[in-house]
Length: 203
Image (cartoon, rainbow, N blue to C red; front, side, top):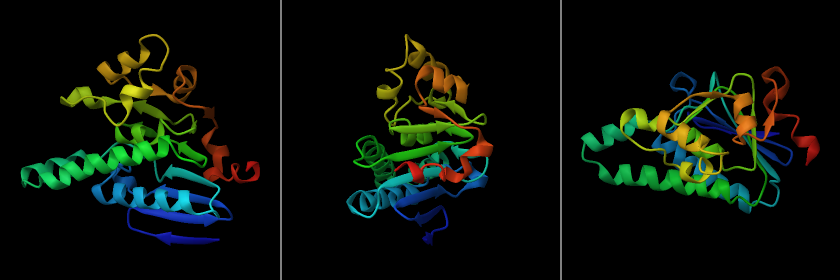
């Protein structure tokens, strides 16, 4: 088993499975400019590596990922750094698209809050595992934005007008409701998920 560490993301290799942990628990694992760039580079490497058969993504602490670090984006704008603003969104959308079209299984362990950019990262993946602690929301409308990061795709495919309702209201739903609506594919109690160790034997 090998591992490598950055301040905001942990990477661990166990056999043919790569584990990625978002590591900003005090900030609910909100994605920074640097994190998005590192995730994009790493996912591209994993997809090309024949030794990698699957990727597991989880968050440290009480949230999976509460979105992009909007505070940092606003700071970029206030300092006139429009290049970083543009690169933030470009890389985030590129990462979301890469996950959605990934040629290898990607398993998201969504324990805790998953909102905004965290939803964009995980909702288009093939395997989206939630727990009794999961809380989903697209709260962008509450601060004058709109649900981006691929939400027009995954929300529009929910039953009836449920996706429209979630996008317009920012309503929070739990893991069971995510299963019922199709936002999640599997439900596992948090005490049983054990960091995704149950995934490896099934490859």
